[in-house]
Amino acid sequence: MARTPLVAGNWKMYKTEAQAEEFIQALLPRVSSLDGADLAICVPFTDLRAMVDSSRGSPVEVFAQNMHYEPEGPFTGEISAPMLGELDVRGVVLGHSERRQLFGETDKALALKVPAALDAGLVPILCVGETEEERDGEETERKLRHQINEDLAGVPAARLAEVVVAYEPIWAIGTGRVAEGEQAQEAIAFIRALVSGRDEAAGESLRILYGGSVKPDNAAELLALPDVDGALVGGASLDPASFAEIAAAASR
Ligand code: PGA
Image 1 (cartoon, rainbow, N blue to C red):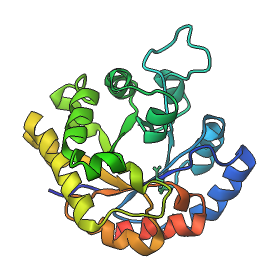
Image 2: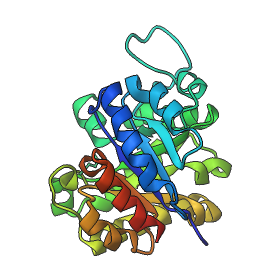
Image 3: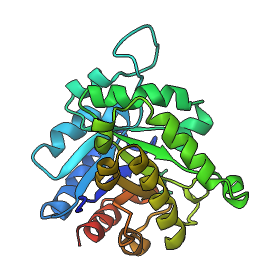
């Protein structure tokens, strides 16, 4: 079954609106003829409106990097799914390991956030992955099973295929230490099997990305793995030329 690859750039807390504008003007001509892959940038809240406006009619979709699960309420400093939807934002990254580790994001909150995103018409990119300690202790599958089961518990089987999962081994994020092809394939096939266990068809069609030190020189190899349906790219997505190169590797 053919799954359209998705290459998503995760900017994290980089780029002011002016810098974002400079980036998109440099990126668009490089990806205008992109075929056979979806392309997204996950940007800071303050860049959303400008990036949605500047990328209209192009192959680039704009995602946020977090949201609250309630549609509104007394939650100072938070942003809701309907607020993102009204800006024509296409989706949202949920459960990135930096949010889990540095900002106390819990599986319990994610179990509410993923369905709230879907209900608002947003595509959730749910991030999962093990620490170095967990991998060394052969705890990778236990961790992934726990995160997938908990975080997707509130998503009805009929909507599971609309979720995008990003497998990001924490030891590979921002370290330059990319997972070996075999490790990435194994973990991603395991995640697919978990989803298939809930719904066979969803397991077949759900997209699972690899993330963690994806660069132009290793993208082609990672993207060619049978269960890898794209990449979540941090550092290398900040430069339009290197991001466009990774996108081109996915569209081949
Ligand atoms: P990296 O980040 O590509 O810089 O390793 C990936 C991520 O955090 O999504």
